Amino acid sequence: MRSVIDKLAQTSNLTDEEFALLLEELSEEDSEYLFAAARSVREREYGKDVYLRGLIEFTNYCKNNCYYCGIRCGNANAQRYRLTEDQILSCCEQGYALGFRTFVLQGGEDPYYTDDRMVPLVAEIRKRFPDCAITLSIGERSRESYQALFDAGADRYLLRHETANPEHYSMLHPKELSIQNRKECLFTLREIGYQIGAGMMVGAPGQTTAYLIEDLRFLQDLQPHMIGIGPFLPHKDTPFKDEPRGSYHLTLQLLSILRLMFPKVLLPATTALGTIHPLGREKGILAGANVVMPNLSPTNVRGKYLLYDGKICTGDEAAECHGCMEKRMERIGYQVVTSRGDAKIK
Ligand code: SAM
Ligand code: FES
Image (tube, rainbow, N blue to C red; front, side):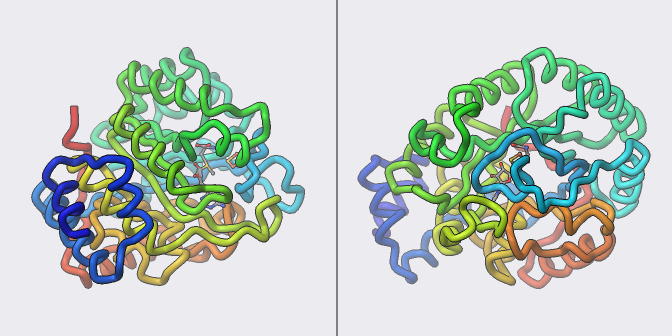
C-alpha cells in the first residue's frame, strides 16, 4: 500500500484499481502514512498557514428539493429567514475587523435574490471591502447572471458537483435537477474567470467506490481552485433521515488523496467534518486541508441554517468562532492568517 501512496505523491495520479485499493483497503497505520504524505505536500505549498473564510448564510429559502438537505423546499418545519442587505454588510464589517479577507455568501436557491437584488449587493461589498475576496455559493444560475455577478465584483464561486455519476445524481435529487446542468455551470463559471470550487459529499446514500473514483476523474477534468468535501449527515426532516452518516475516516483519507492529486488546491476542513467528530477540523488540517470557514452569520439565524442534524457553532458569536478557530489551529502547530488566501493556481 505504501508504494501506491508514494506513487500518488510523486505523480499525483493512480489507476482506477489503485484508487479503489486506497479507498477500500487502507489500514490505520497506512492512513497515518497517507496523512503524513499529504501534510508534507501541503506544507511545501502553503507552509503552516490556514486561510479563513467568513461564511454568511444569508438565506435558507430554497426552490430545490434535494433529498439530503435540511433546507429543501419540501421541509415545512424549516423556519425560513433572509438577511437584509444591511445585516449582510454588518456581518462583513464585523468579519473584516476580526481579520477575515474572504466573505462567502451562501444560501439556498432563493428566487427572491434576482440579479436586480444580488448585483447591487455584491457591488456594495466590493466597494466597501476592496481588498477582500467575494465568494458566492448560491447554486445554479444562467451564464448572464454569473457574468453580471462577476462584473459586479464577485471573485469566486462554490458549487459542489455532489456526485459526478448521473445515476447517483438522480438518486440524490429530484428529476428537475441534472448533473449535466451542474457540470455546465461549473465550466461556465470557470470560463467567465471565477476561481471555482466543486466537491462531493462523502458517504452520500448509494455512493460506491466506483462513483468516488468518477468524482476524482471529474475533478481532474475540471481542475478547480477549491474542493469542498464533507461527510453526508442525515437531517430528520428529509427523505434520507434514516440513512447512515458518511465515514469520518474516509473523509480524512479523501482529503489526503485530493491534496496529493492537486498539490496547490484550496481544501477546506468543513463544518460537517467538525460536526461528525469534535476534532474533525484539526484532523482535516493534519490530513492536508488548508482552509477553515468559521461562521459570520448573526446568532439569531444560525440555528435555522440546518442542512443536517447536530450542526456545530449554532450558538456562537462571530468573534467566538474566530477566536476558537485561532486556538484550535495553534494547538496543532498551524496559524490562521489575515489574507485573501487565493489558490496558487492560475
Ligand atoms: N444552494 C447552494 C448550492 O446548491 O450549491 C449552496 C448551499 S448548499 C446547502 C451547500 C452544500 O451543503 C451542498 O453543496 C451540499 O454538498 C451540502 N449539504 C447539504 N445537505 C447536506 C447534508 N445532509 N450533509 C452534508 N452536507 C450537506
Ligand atoms: Fe437547496 Fe439544499 S435543497 S440548498
